[in-house]
Length: 225
Image 1 (spheres, helix red, strand yellow):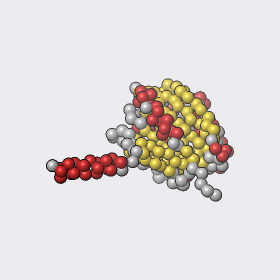
Image 2 (spheres, rainbow, N blue to C red; image 1 turned 60 degrees about the vertical axis):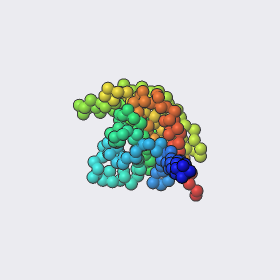
Image 3 (cartoon, rainbow, N blue to C red; image 1 turned 120 degrees about the vertical axis):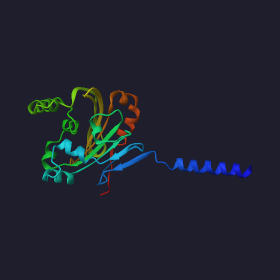
Image 4 (cartoon, rainbow, N blue to C red; image 1 turned 90 degrees about the vertical axis):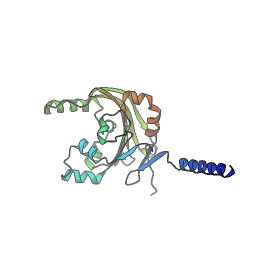
């Protein structure tokens, strides 16, 4: 009996140690180490190159795509049981996309708070209208419909960095998708870091506190020198 109790106690201790060893979060930094954030460990990390091709419109074998790859870092995380980069534009489960862009001289001259708002999806009225006109010109029905602005905040950051955090809805197919978009321009005006969190609107309302924690972890890292 004593041996049985000792065995049970040992197995319980092993189980507790194993459980304690499971990380709660995945910690992420871009390739230059200047932007970092964390997501729950239950999210699956994905290769975001297909998202970059979709957003830029560049052919993957073009010179533009090669140059973009040198300036842009990105990653994605999906909590779906069947993770896919396609979920960036619609999923019942949370999806996180993050990207860091080293700006060209032309982009640095044109950057503004509105450009930060529109960095991934059309948010401002001018860019939403341009998106609609492009859909009409190509004869393709727009993927994004019935925009609703939920919140628009200008971020006050240390050392001269600036940014925005915008929350908005789009109807995509038959579902309403909520997006939480954070974009930060570093103090030198040379790098833009963006995080986009997406989920169907009902999912987002239920888990808004969790998504706030993810968005709040998205920060610039001050390197020495």
